[in-house]
Structures are given as C-alpha cells and as structure tokens.
Amino acid sequence: MRGKGSALMTRLIRLLQALYLFSAPTMVCAEVLVPAKFSDQSPREDIRKKIFPEGTPDKACKIISKDPSGVVEVDPGLTNALQSLIKGINSSDDKALLPLFHPQIKVKSAQVKVALISIQKISGSKPDATLFRAYGINNISGDSGAVHCAEDGLLLHPLYGHPLQAGVWIQAMGQDEVTRVYVILIPSKEKWLIGAWHVQQWTHAGKDYTAWREEAEGLASRKEDLAAWLYFDITTKLMDGGKFIIFPVAEDIAAERAKVLNGKVILDLFAAKLPGEKLVYASSLFSRKGASILLRFGIPGEWSANAIMEHCRAKYKHLSQESWMKSVAGIRCDYVLPKESTQKEGALGGIFVDQASLGAK
Image (cartoon, rainbow, N blue to C red; front, side, top):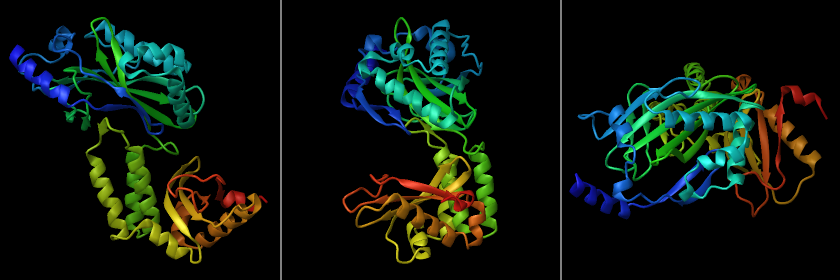
C-alpha cells in the first residue's frame, strides 16, 4: 500500500492545479489547494471504511444523509460541519462561515459575503436552508475524474488529493426561488473543511429544469421555435453545476435546443427580425415574470435614458406581433458602446420592457 501511495503522491504533485472556489453566479479564483503528504492523504480512514467497505470500487459515491437538519449518522464531526454550514447560510453570517473554509485556499470574509448575497438574490431575503443530500465520495486515486452517483443520476467531480470527500447539497428556499449550494468538504484529523463552493439557481418562476424542459418540448411540437429555444436555454442554465456537478441529461437537452434552430444561430435569427439594428448579443433571460429575452445592441455613442426606453419599447412592440411572443414575459435591452465588450452589460445599462410597462412613460 505504501508503494502504491508513493506513486500516487508523485502523480498528485504533477497534477497540482488552481481550484475555483466560487462559481456561477460569482467566480473567484482561489489559491492552489496543495495535496497533503501521503500519510495525511486520508486522515479519516476509519470513516471512509465505514462508508465504503472493502471491495468497493476505487471511485464510488453513496448518499450518507437526506436529513434536512444535517445529521450524518456515520460521523458526528461531519454532522457538526454541516449544521454549522446550514446555520451560517440561514443567518447570512460570513464571519461564522469563514472558519469552515480550508486555510490553504485563503478565503476572505468579503468573498463569503458575496456568496451569501448571491443566494439572497436568487431566493429572496431570509432563505431557509436545509440539507438536501450529503454524498460520501470514495476517490482512492485522488484525481478529479467524475464519480458516478447512481441513485440521483449525477456525476460529481471531486477535488485533487483526497481519497475521502463529502459532496453536500444545501437547498435554500425563499419567497422568490430555490437555490442549491453545492459544497465539497474534506476531512482533516480534527474536522471537516470546505474546499469548494458553488451556487446554483434551481428554480425560475417557481419551476425546476424538468418543468421548463416539458414546456420547451411542448413549444417545439407546436413549431414555436424561438420560444422553444428560449425555454430550452433556461433549462440548461438551471442545470449549471459549475465544475462539480454534471447532469448527464443536460447533453440531451442541449441537443434538443440545437434541433429547434436547425443549425442556425440565435443571434442571426433575432437580427433578421430587427433590421437596421446592430444586434451584438442575444440570449434567454431570467426575469421574475418568466422566460424573457436579452438583446444587446451596439450603439455609436451615448443615448439618453429616454432614448433607451423608447428604443426598447419599440423593439418589444415589433417582436410582439409574432405569435411565439405570447410565451415570452418580456425583453431586456442592453446597450454597449464601441469599445465595450458585447458579452456583458455596458456602462449605459439597459431596461426591461413587458406588456404591463408599455403604458408607463
């Protein structure tokens, strides 16, 4: 075993890479999480062997808790870590959460605060966080290759250098939407520490990705292709597990999304419907009212707020003449100047227009 461990350590040293701690909607690059010495690679072998007895494949996943309160029967230490994590999210207390992060990734309180704010932006104020799933991850090789979790049909990517990890899915329900926070916990000799954190919007307009996919398929069957594409695109965004969670069904949904456009590009299709405009970006958009469209226009110089409003209202009225628009809640128009990126909101910002706002001047 020691000879195998020595070879493993050599591979791990060669495979050091940066860990992305916070991913969508906020991405912050963290320090390299250096694999421990081999003698410390799996400091809780007793727990690993309880979860994964001899004969278990070197890569394996097992649900170890579904208890909303965060109790994990196999290890009181993991229970303590989970309950502290849940409490910190519920109280939105960055100072309480900060000690839970692994010291090697050097997380600052401000970064934790941003992550907590991102949860509130999705779920609404005072979200109620509970444990959805806790997965035990057996990863003897220590690499980051996907581990199959058969019970939930997921692939989880572990962190380098730790044979035992816990993948924890926290669900935060608020007055607006449901957020899922996926956290990877790694054991030290004394406690479990956070090695990665990903915030994922789980519902939009109160519906999860399965409901959005069903509606998208219905629109596609009625040949309302642009609306179907928007609904499929929202479906894929709701399945964004960052670098850590892969939904195998996402490939099927992406294929369905591509099929409704018959190989055409969504930007070109919208540009054709808005002749005379310099349309530089088009996408689906989460809005509180439902599936919406984001259109980004390139303009040669600054426009007044009134000019922006009138322009976007005119584009909405023009598109509303098409039958598929009855399935769209509204449009957001962004405006970018010549030297600004087309991939993000410009300095002028934008405006959201729907049927209800047309009467407002």
